[in-house]
Image (cartoon, rainbow, N blue to C red; front, side, top):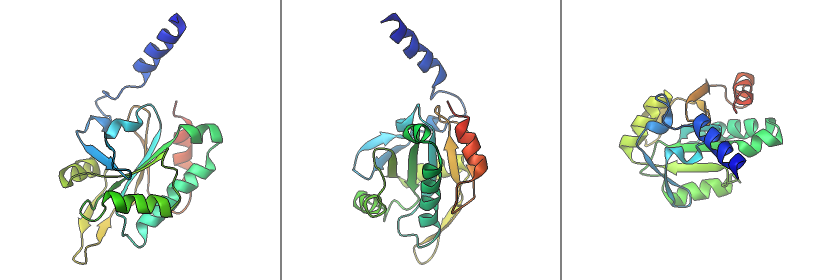
Length: 180
């Protein structure tokens, strides 16, 4: 019992969401594809690949998902089991819970490890700013946006960012291997 307590204390000391540079410090409530509400730190303790997208995007966003799936397929099964994937919509008006669920289903995403989420416009702006993602709404309702996949360490700090699309970025994979 003492060993379990010590292990838990050590884990709490190593995995902290209160690191000053942690993305998890943002006050943002997300709603996932199942309608469950949670905070950004839902995946605390896991390496997380996060990006921002919009569900009706015809080109870049499907490629972002394919890129994240490529990374998922490339890593060893033990690393894969620890990984989490978070896609946050920049289009909360159109990306309803039902639309996010439809997208997760059509793309056959494992929702035990993949989260498609929406939040309010103010939180979208805060998250995008912290992740260095620029976006703007176009007159046709689409978006022009950065295509960046960010690796968050288990405590929510940015470990690596990649703009390589369509394949697993070797430098991102190396950064992922360095995660506890």
